[in-house]
Length: 487
Image: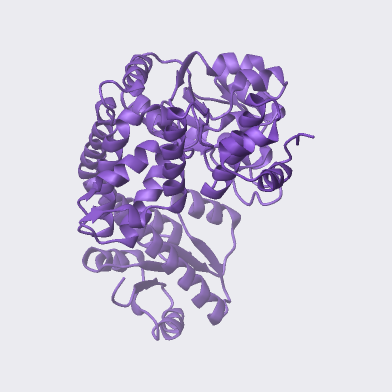
C-alpha cells in the first residue's frame, strides 16, 4: 500500500465518530458514516482497507452490516467497536461476518492503534501473497518449459556416448553394461577406486532410465556420523536430537519417484546398515523422532571403493544388504588400466579448464603426454583434472611443457625410464606409485644389491666387482639397507 490506508468508521453517535477520527487521522485517511446504508454508498466508490463499525445501530446491526460487506466487498478488514458484549453477537460476528477483532468500549487509544497496525500488516501480507500467487500462476508455463529444457540438457549431458573413451578401452564394456542396467529398475552397485567417476556413471544411469524426469539426489555416506546420516537420508522431527531445530525432509522422501545415490556405502556402520536394509526391502522408513513410517518409491544406486566381499568376511558389512544393493554390479576400471584413454581425457580436460580460467592454452606437449601415460594416477581421473588445473594456472601456454608438471609425476616418469632400462639388463623392478624419486632409487639400489648377493652366494668380492664398488663401499651399502653381510 503506497498511499495512506483508508479506514471507514461506521457509528450512529457523532461523538464516537469524532473520537475515532481524531485518534486515527495522524496515520490514516478516515471516512465516517452514521449507518450501514451510508457506509455502503462509500464502499461503492472508495477503496476501503479497514472498517470500524459500531454494533448497535438503527436499521441494521454492525454484525449484519459486516456480513453484507463480507459477501459484496470481501477485501476490507472488518472490526466491531461496541459497548455491548453479548456473546451471541460476538459468535455471529466471528462466524458469519468474518470479523478480525471485537473491541469493547471504553477502549484505550494506544491499544486501538496497535490493533489497527496489526490488521494493516495482515492486509499487506494477504495482498503480497495474492500477488505472489498470481505471479506464480502466470509464470508457471514458462517455469515448466524451463524445467523441461534443463532436464533435456541434463539427459543429453549425461548420455553414455558423452563418456570419453577409445574403442579399445575397458570403459566401452562398462558403458555397454551400464546402459543395459539403466533400462531395468533395480538397485545398482558401482565399485571402483576414488576418482574413477562413480557419481558421473550413477547420474548417467538415472538420466537414461524411466525415472529421468524425477529427482536425482546424492549423499556421501562416509562423511557423516550415524545420527546425522540418518537425519539426512530419512529426515527428522523437531527436537529429535540436539541441534534438530526444525522438521527436516530426508533425501529418500525428496527422491520419491526418482533415484538416490549413496556414495561410499561401505563406510556405514552395521547399525545403520539395518535401517538402510529396511528401506530397500519394504520401501519404508521412519524419520528420527517420528512414530509414523513413510513409504517411498526410490531407485538406489550405491557406490564403494572398498571390496565389500572382504568387508562381509570381516563382519563389517551385512551380507543381506550387500545382495540387496548388488542386484546389478558394475566395476569401474582405474585410470592406470586405461592408458589408451589418457590423451583423450587430458585433451578434453585441458580445453575445459582453459575456458574456465580464460587462458590461451591449446595443448599439452608430447613429452607431457608421455609423462601422463607413464604415471600410475593413484587418484585416477580426479587427480588428472587437478593436475591440469594446476598446470594451466602456472602457465599461459599455448603449449604446456614439462616445466609445469608436478614433481611427483616427473619423478615417476624417471623411475619408469629406469625400470625400462633395467628390464633390458634383466633386473626385475616395478616403480612404486606415490614414492619419491629418491626413495625409489634407494629401493632399486637395495634390490640390485640383494639380487647380486644371491647370484654370487654372498661372495663380496664378486658382488663389489659386478656393481662397481669397493669392498668397503659395498659393506657400507649393505649395512645401510640392512642386507645380510658376508663373512
